[in-house]
Length: 152
Image 1: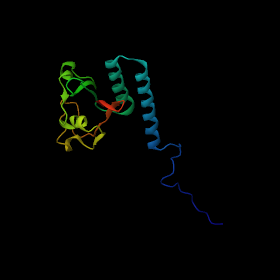
Image 2: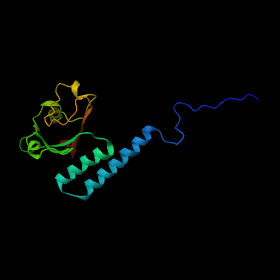
Image 3: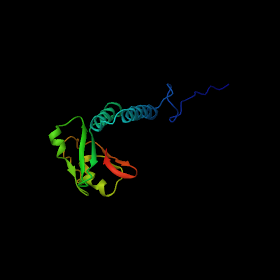
Image 4: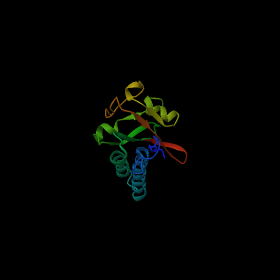
């Protein structure tokens, strides 16, 4: 009888049963669950925004996060919350007009934007100065009833 060694296939699960992608999915689901709990518990808008950003930072690896909200009077996108926390006075003055920079672009055409590296996009304005130029950037529209209300 010939002895044939059995080798694990490259695409088979590791001995513990979980691959890295599976582990990341579990972490993301836990973060989404924590965010859903925050969103369902309070109507305190500012506190809720800060808590959501903190959870995304602590549990999902979000390095720098900002929630911007569409101002109903001007139509501009205004910064409302950031993590890590920034100077409140500085935050109140950060806004984007339609078509202005990456975030203002979302006012005109709401869609998810993903940049592999901030430094490679000349339209990225970095008005708060919190984003590292060599890191990726993701902007996601926040819609309520199909209408753009903000950007994460």
